[in-house]
Structure formats: structure tokens, C-alpha cells
Length: 264
Image 1 (cartoon, rainbow, N blue to C red):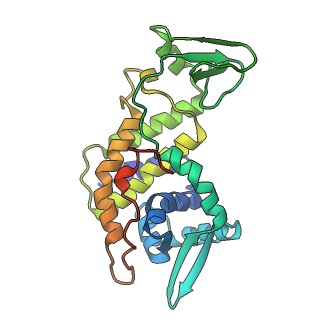
Image 2 (image 1 turned 180 degrees about the horizontal axis):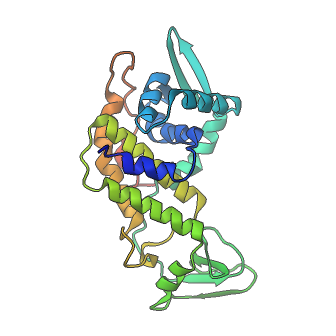
Image 3 (image 1 turned 90 degrees about the vertical axis):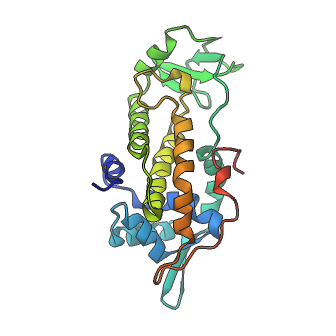
């Protein structure tokens, strides 16, 4: 069985893949730290490994070019793509959020109120956020009771809970796998694509709020550890040339910094 099939099936369960979004994931994870440009043949090889057809990729690149996110260049018979200034401007804050290190300590103070705050969880008809608040409107600040975590989880927004379960599914499918370079690069792309969609759409759920029955005990830490395990082989594939697919430039910053320190 294809070791990546559980991840591919999980991607397809979301509906028709948004290939343009996968392309943006590849740029953020495998291109920007290696010169900022990727050959079309390499991009096609990588996304082809997860089931994206060449025609769908061409359509996605055309859309991204039309919308001002990427620009193409052709030298001889070799086509390549890089992000535009507009695309680059969107990357900073998102990259810092995606590759942020797992928090060291559990939250001790929480605020529940009727007004959404940054990183607030939508639960039980209101908003629960870490830390004390000096904002306006109804709010209660204090520590969580012994049984609060279960109640919070049971009342979590259903779309958010589903996204967390799907993230855990991918992590479980990748547990213990020792993949060759191309497979590792494809797996890392799917892992970070799932994580990117989760953290950019939903607020963080601290580890202490996950129920004991959840398949992954510390989701953020598990993503960081799986990323670290896949990355040596994935980076090896980026170093390799094969036929008309030339090797990518050397990395300008070590992948080891991701999930370990704040990303600027």
C-alpha cells in the first residue's frame, strides 16, 4: 500500500483539492529558503506524487499568476516560478504562525466573554481566550475547573474539532514511517499544508484542553516532531537533480530552526 495514501485520502475528504493553495504551501515550506524559485518540472514531480495532475497544476499556476501571487520565467525549455512582491508580503506573518514553537507552559488564566479576542476559542455561545482581559463587555476571568477541559472540548466549534481530528489522522498515519526522499518531501508538504490550514483558520487549542481519548496527546509538539523526522530526507530530495530536474540552491536558513525559534 502507498504509505502516503491515508494522507491523500484525508486531503480528498475535504473536497476537490485547492491546488493553488497546495502550491502556496510548497513555496512556504520548500522554496523560499532555497532561492525563492522552483522549476515547473520539480513542482510537477512533487505534487504529482500526491495525486495532482499536470493540467490541474497548470491551471493553478495560471490563476496565481493572474491574481498577482506568482510570476513565471522561461529560460530555454525550462520554466520556473517565484512569488511576486505581493505574494511575499503575505508570507511573513503567516510563516511565523505556521512554524511557531510549541508553548512551554500551560495557560493558568482564562477569560470567557461575549466578545471575540485574538486566539479565542468559540465555545458554549461565547469566546474563551488565554490570559486576562481589560476589554469591554461581559467577561469572566479566572482559572479552569477540574472538569472544564471536557466541557470545552464537547462545546468546541464543530468545524474546528473536525480540523483537529484530521490533523491527528495525518500524524497517526505518518508515525514510524521511514520514507525515501521524494515520499518524505511529499509527506512533509501534506503535513504542513494540513497544519497551515488549521492554524491560519482556527485559534490554538492548548494541549491541556485535549481529552484523554484524543489520538495525539500534544498536537503542536507532534507536528514539530514529525516535521523534524521527515525533513532530512525531504531536504535531500530538494538537493537532488534528476534528468531535466536540476538541484535546488542550498538552503539559506536551516530547516531545524522551524518549530524551535520564532520565524521572522
